[in-house]
Length: 129
Length: 381
Image (cartoon, rainbow over all chains, first blue to last red; front, side, top):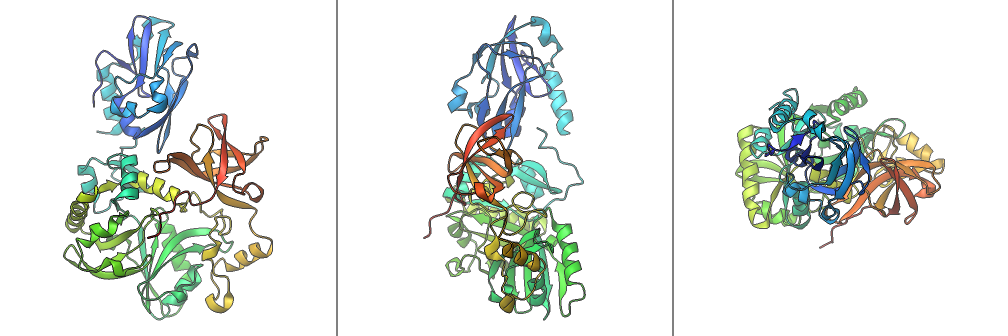
């Protein structure tokens, strides 16, 4: 599984690719693999506020539903509408399939998130491998 | 999302190493380390509906009754009438508590006049065995054996199941009717029980082979090879669950349990209450009383989500005027029907087909409609 080095990660298995105050948010390769075939994604609307650590939507596979947690606080500037009809895109490439784009309230917030190396270590501990 | 974790305390089937080598996702299922997803739940599900799939169901339990009193024991324990069975025939049945709720649902196989095998669920095995001992204790002429660990049980399911298995056996499978079984040579093994049974709503077979790892792995590989031309897939518990849900089949702990009675579950047709022909059994008095009192107050129904959303196990069901009336017992997207479906218990007055209800999905009311069960029924040949 791949975790791009320029992304930051949450312990709830989201990634954020941030450039200054603009960021894209998705779920990790580990998350999509654990969920299995993804069939439904529930996302906020453009203009909605998201808060770091709070849920902003959900992603559902055939067998499970999983909340999505915002890595940062901010305002939703775009929603990936392609996922309405093709939620399985997340299974195909979790690292490039963003869910929402966010304008960050505070660009330095990403500093508190896990690096790719930290995240991989966290997964290894969580799964016992 | 830590489903791939497994601890050494979990029980393993003889095929565990095979599943792990194939990188199947493993979960704790009733204390067993079992594959939930082998290569993608939707692909596995569709393979069984349109071709063939193979499942490791060795975690199921097998209790055998031997001796001249074995029929009497089965009759006392189970609600269906086992005296109607011929040698080589299987029967869906259930063991009940005195109040008419479920100890477990079972499949009874008549091996010979004095020899019956009942297949029980994995998660309820210890409880079932203890229950059986309690009920038949003191009954004459019956000896019970727990053979659960003696067999690797492999289910080959789907419209191409017969063609797949036929390559591996000299037994003419077309002579085995649905819910019958025989013994034959399979993959060079003698005396293999071959049953035309399953839990997917498709045609299929369950074979019982010795539970040593080498034999189990060899047979598993030979089944996969035999089904290759039909696109066979190894399937996990995830697909097993969506397949049985589409087929409207009950799962212990969901549609049936020790708080749900036979009539509520819609399984009354399997409870033989005619004392003259069947005799007494545990739970009979309660069922007779429920029937005399006008039947059950709630019923198991099929639901189809009308609005966007997936109703899942445990989600509450509401009337359209906002009163909580029931709960979903199993819910999932249906890979074959491409709808979001569920089974739920609702009061009888909400059970008519086309009744509209609402399911609360994470705080939102989402409309659903009562539909007939099963959601899916295979075409008769």
